[in-house]
Image (tube, rainbow, N blue to C red; front, side):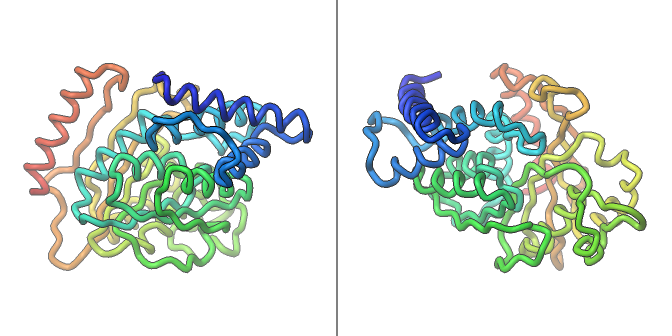
Length: 307
């Protein structure tokens, strides 16, 4: 941990714990108040920190709060994974000023990691259904000075959002409870409840410009589920699969939560599919030399298939 980030975290944590005691709120609700005081200039903040130091310090505080406020679908995207998505976005998305959407933003950690990585090149849109999480995300966006518009809503209901250059999302996994809304999607289940993660992929493609890219963190077994056939034929019509990267199990608590990254390009007249889809296993992310070798392979694939 670097010292700037640590001192910011200590400031945030002390303030949050004292609000928590005084007002008998949860840690996350108290953290919201802390970020509001910070934005109002009422906290003495350690100087010299970067946007990334601020994001990481707040992320640590959120992780602490989430241990107490446990909702399994609110798992935060691990940092190493956010940086890997940032690297991929930088590789594929060539617009000097790009728009990015996260339809399941949570506290915005994945979106902010990517935007900090490409600092100054992106304008973001975040959609989140949980009121507390999106208010936290909005405060963090202001504190790290990233231009993001926030929508408090169910992202599978109609979105009033212009098509974007790219989508990044750690997809919510599970069944989607509202069968009436699901019935408007091609990827609805023929009977019973539909998979939320399939509907999010469809909704994201609908809101991406032709030729735009989508970067999803998906369940590793998404193409082996009972509804995988429908997903495959839908993707064939709508997009070119660029890459499927299996992530190392050690970044997830349980093997059954193992994930992969799926990179898609929305179809456009005259756009060709890559000669071959990049199928890769991401090595242990804490070993720089194996990651360097991995990036070399990805770059070589890109030159061969995309340049």
